[in-house]
Structure formats: structure tokens, C-alpha cells
Length: 68
Image 1 (tube, rainbow, N blue to C red):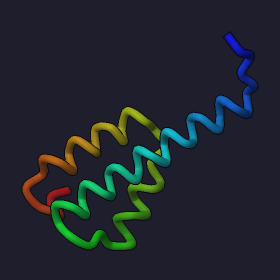
Image 2 (cartoon, rainbow, N blue to C red):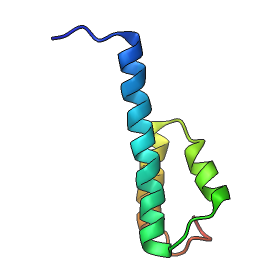
Image 3 (tube, helix red, strand yellow):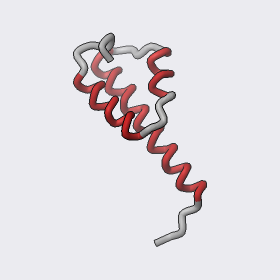
């Protein structure tokens, strides 16, 4: 197994977080249209992958953008 440096691991984690954030925003856009700048900032400030996955599920199932 190749040796992974701390910087590579951090980069991988940041990439996963960025992808998860975009998935939440995209789900909201598909369901409800434009997502406000304020909500995008709130989503982009999340830094826990488990939380982002939960928010993605919520974005798919929530009845309205206001309830998100």
C-alpha cells in the first residue's frame, strides 16, 4: 500500500467535504430552484462529513426549502 502523507490525506478529506457540500446544494436546486447566497454559505461552512450526509438526505426529503 502506498505511503500517504498528511497533506495528501487532508487534501482527500477536503475534496470529500467539497463534494458533499455541492451534493446538498445541487439536491436543493433540483427540488426548489435557486438557493440563496446565505443558505449556500451555511452549507459551505459545514465541516463534518456525517453532518453533510445527513443534510443531503434532508435536502432530498424535506417538503419545502423554508423547512430546510
